[in-house]
Length: 404
Image (cartoon, rainbow, N blue to C red; front, side):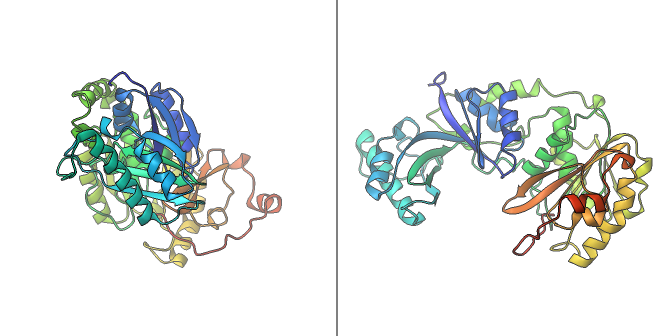
């Protein structure tokens, strides 16, 4: 079983498929294929453990058991019953069912859950020669996805999502998801050789994810995964992968300092505690500081990441936009610093005062945003009036929401 090859699926936030695929290829995973909202790959059980430990931008690792047509409940039942559930789920295991359906004849999620559950019970009943499953053991979470009358069945090997690194147990008024922060660090090609700046750090996620990336520290080293408790898997799977991941960590002395600051003292206290839990306190220099009072032009060459507030949970919309307008000239004057700023405000570039050199559409949950990238010197940049004439902006319909 350990050396057998399986198919896996990594769901991810929309816009991060390419990042996740690149991560998996760097792990030497075979058959990596990016699709909308997910990435598929192949491998053995060690590959499954490695992906759970080391993925920075994926949400979880699903073991793909099979796919089949499912335009009717009978097809769904028979397809599920034909899968080898007994290979994974022991007689005492708990196997809850959840899933989703899209553009399919079967759209009632509760009914689909009941059918899948019944089919798995029928399969296990025949294999274990029992009429009753107490489900008092470890969890083997079943997931289904039905799209265009085709069903896919999975076992969730992860448990709580991979963004649950373990360093941020306490809530924050407006957190940035860890997987998205890690993706932003990778898009910025941050490697730790030059300083990293986060002048609106909030709960410190961007700086902490940057530190973990620069160190080469696997983000899952401080947590456990559901598959580690599965009695049907060989022992020691994760132990060997953890040891392998530990060997890849760079010395902290090789990493340039990370400067994280915020105007709110409470946020700095939260950031300090989160950095301590993540084990990166020595890399991050925290300071209570107003970003509007900073001289960005005096910063040493490096990378600046920012997740500014803009009007839903922190400040009102008018105040948030005034903040961006005030910050714009200061940020754009910092020619020696590459700047990556995430926002869902469609007026962002006008407020900052210059069109981005490059932008990338990202999603924080279901909230559409853009990562605005500025890396050209101001003298070589396109002016805002030229940009507006060449690329007129169409207003986005519907209410706008903050990602901070």
